Length: 161
Image 1 (cartoon, rainbow, N blue to C red):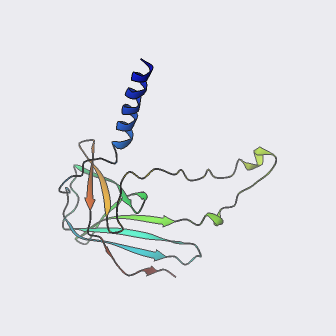
Image 2: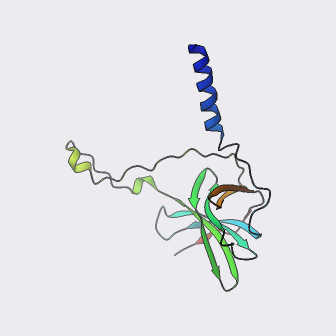
Image 3: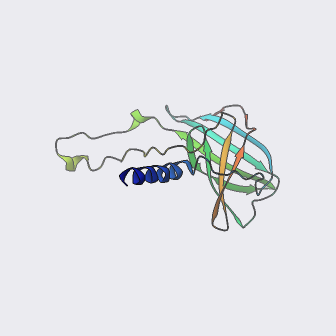
């Protein structure tokens, strides 16, 4: 009986953890992408850098679609939808943080350490992607969908002053 419970529990846990990685990708996105690219950027301050991934659309995103997140190079970010002068885009900004910039108070009195910020939570990445692939998640009628984009191109790096 103990063996049966162990096997059943193992199968249940395995099914739960592989659910996201085996997520079914939609064959067609609910919006038409005319161009998909990413650009590295470097800010004016030392340690300020990141990557912007932009999807140019032929038309605005429909009202029944709620664009959610972008999965790219082992990172996840929320997406921004913008429309300006007949240009429609979806973009995500992946900011690279410099851990050495944090001021951490180390003291024998724990009350003095209470002002320290909590460390960033590391979330497991649910997809295996190459450098020119990303996954977009969105909701249609409260159901989460995924679309895998495989033809990203790299644009010139942006240097901010």
